[in-house]
Length: 249
Image 1 (tube, rainbow, N blue to C red):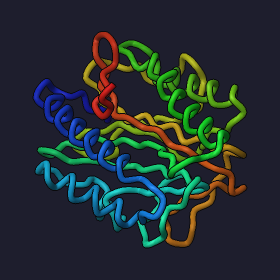
Image 2: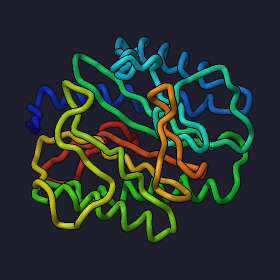
Image 3: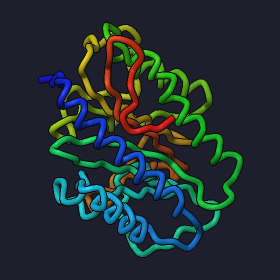
Image 4: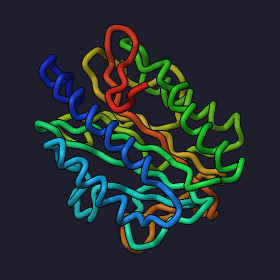
C-alpha cells in the first residue's frame, strides 16, 4: 500500500531531511585520506544524535552501523571498519535519519583526495542521472518514466545500472511501497500523485551491472571489481515541481 502523506507528516519529513542534509555536509568535510570508515560512522552517529534524531540504519535488520560506507568497487551496504581511506579512493555514504517517527534517506559518492578523471566522471554521471529522472517525479507521471530516464542516461555514457537493488517509498517506515527500479519502460508503472514520498537512488557500475553479496550478508560489490557510485535523495511529489527533502541546492 502506498502512503500519501498529510501536511503534518510532510513537515516532519522536511525536518528529518534537513537534518540528514546537514549530516552529509559534515561527513563530506571529514572524508580524507587516513580517516577510517568507522570514524566516519562515529561522526554521523554523534551528529544525528545532536539534532535529537536517530540513525535509521543502526540495527535495521541487524545492520551494525549508522551509515553504509561503500568504497571503490563496493556498490552498497558496506560496513564501516578500521580500514583507512586512501588517496584516490571513492566512497559512497548512504544514510538515513528518523525524526519524530519519520525517515528520510540519501546517499552521496565522495572523492578521497585527488581521484582519477574516470572516477570523477562516474560520480558526476551518477549524480546527473538522478536529476534527469527527477524531471518525471511529478503528479500524474508514471513511476517507471523516472526509472527509464535514469537507465537511458547512464547507458548513454557507457556505464551499467544495477538491477537487483532499487529505490523505495519512505515515511514512517524506512522502506515503503512502491519499489523504484533504476531501469524500466518509459510511460509504465503506477501514476505518481501529490503527497507521495519516495527515495530514488541510482547505483551505477563502471563495468557490468552484475553484483555479488559477501559472506557478511550485507556488503554488495561489483562482480567484475569495477568502480561503483551511488546517489540518492528523498523526494516529495507535489502538484508542481518535486521537492528534494534531503538536498539543499
